[in-house]
Image (cartoon, rainbow, N blue to C red):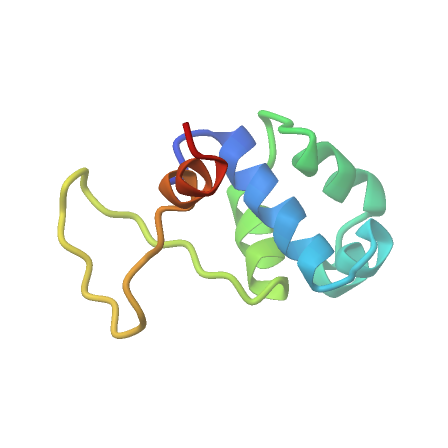
Length: 93
């Protein structure tokens, strides 16, 4: 997923938290922040401290990778899936 804004990153983290079946309180405990901080971050709070965001992503077993637009990735895993295109195909015309 391309993350182009804090809202994108917050949505990604919220989706992963839900996928893992974690409450905000459980994620907060893993991240060593308050539940209110997790709530504010998931709401797209613009002043979220980067260090805490990275710690939260680590608690969700996610890694942040920064690339230049159009740069080839050197991932050893499966090729990324374009979820938007996949959903468009499923919905049809």
